[in-house]
Length: 454
Image (tube, one colour):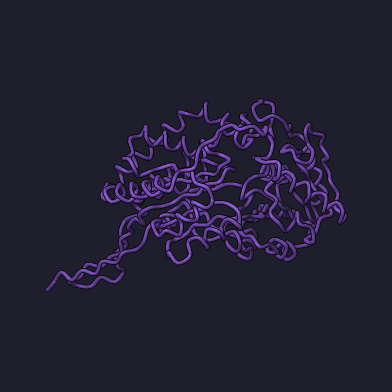
């Protein structure tokens, strides 16, 4: 389904026979791939990346049609290149054997990081290339085979990855894009034929993955929901904080797991911050994502937009104030188009401050001190990132130490650094992606205890 409700791309789901054949091809190809030197694996990855980037002109409007991101932003390949290149670059060092720290005469003792085997990547629609590449490239670099099941909303992304790997000459069977429905995915997970699954999506989806995989003992990487907070301190550089937090809240129509969904501002700078935030938000141009003037496109589906409308209406009933109230063509129930919204007078009795929005709405609360801010930031079932806006690094670290998240930012937000592990706590899920630690999660340790002197 496309942004205007029409069918943009349609593909049949694979048959059970085709799914089984894909897994068998992956298993056979992986055995030989595991013997391929890491440097050679990297050459294939970089060739795939080059082929993918060469498709940019076709891919950018495809993304706009499939999930609504405006063409003016040019796709996702800046981040894709950064992450893929970094994971290729560190692969040899990250995957080398770990020698025992206490040498013993006559023995050689070490731990190898060996491939998991067949990795299933279940990718989401919101950043369809960035989220997928987080696992696809390091899993292949680690010596595994990859089967990709992409979101139905972004069907063509899986095909683009397949085209890029085919053009790169990757041995057949090592990467396969397969179209599956939910029932088929659950059956595959329970089959015992998959060694690791990486899923990015909702908390409910993550629970379904765990349930389907129960008893197989496969390893899981689950990046689920987020309700990421920001805390603006009195010494923050205000224009910088405003510009970056507005972008962090509303880029991609707020459809980002690490987007800013709630902001806590010290009472000393609250009025100034709200005034600046509201003024900056009013600059958005909501409209057709295929037009260059558009800075905010529709949400991926009308039901997502209706959730934001419901959260806003509930907050207003409970005493919140809406500051934007922008007039947007087609902004009505049942439409994916809606304007960004900024709410004040909010509290944690409102769903907009507690439940994942995943859309262009943000609540701003006044706080008296760090203690209150920390308590509110932690008052959430989620824990992906938190951002702290101050010029005092040590104070930011001290606050960050007490915030229940996988990542702490200072003076930035909504970004994945491939050199740092991407992980979460609480209902945000488990596992880890990117960095050397990401490789640890895509391999299994195998000990070698060799007595050489006999």
